[in-house]
Image 1 (cartoon, rainbow, N blue to C red):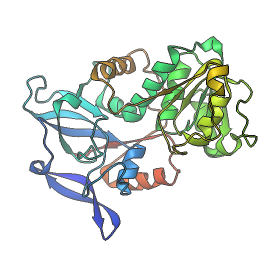
Image 2: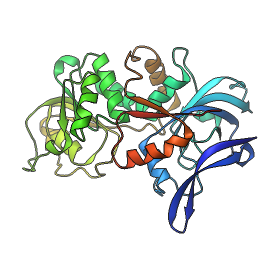
Image 3: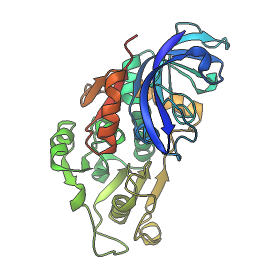
Image 4: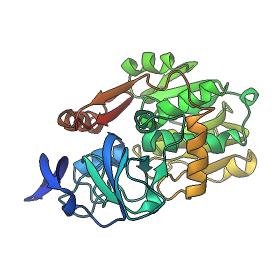
Length: 329
């Protein structure tokens, strides 16, 4: 059977995206074939589309690290034809052809059965971004109570950050978000953030080991200077989670003093190889107590033919909120 997919080709050192026809027989090995109904756009997808070899080693390739749909065929008795399922993480869309194609073939161990209270569209509105955000919030609230003080979210207008704002507000926390520019402030305030800070204003030129104690906790999605600022301004006993590096893989001006003098904690978040038991636990929370009325706020739904334009918007830091892909067939 033929189907449509976005395919990234390497031609004379350049990476060229095309929408092509493929055949299910061309898909990589796996014991379950899924007819993809929804996917979503994540920063890793944008990097893969641009030929980043740190994300995708071999081309041609189909990005899409998220996919939700129905089982088309299965060699595993745990998954029945027509059953609604989804995948986030593992190698999907990185070196295994992903959700920017209308069909995927994957190992059954990667697949999550859709919780009863969650639609396929809602699963992709969350996607890797929402799941990563949920893991971050899940870790933070085990240590920080709402009365302890405000929570700072860096990269707050992006997919992970905007979900974190929604979750924290729903759980009763006071949230302050760092955003890239003025036009993103209203979006964040509409999600319930108490206040926003423009990224260029969130900086410290003193390079002091510790700054004024301001935040009870931090959800960091960008790394680099913002994470350094956030850690150095945590309150005593505070904690920060970190899951991204768009602002840099280093943490400048950092030393041990916030950790040994204020007892702060830094927690790394990995959504790719997260154990399946924890993955299912968090997805069930997302389908139930954390699912709010604002889930679809800030969501853009696009067709396959529109996705590459959104990829460029993401690479150029012009994207606000979250983009999901709806396959037309």
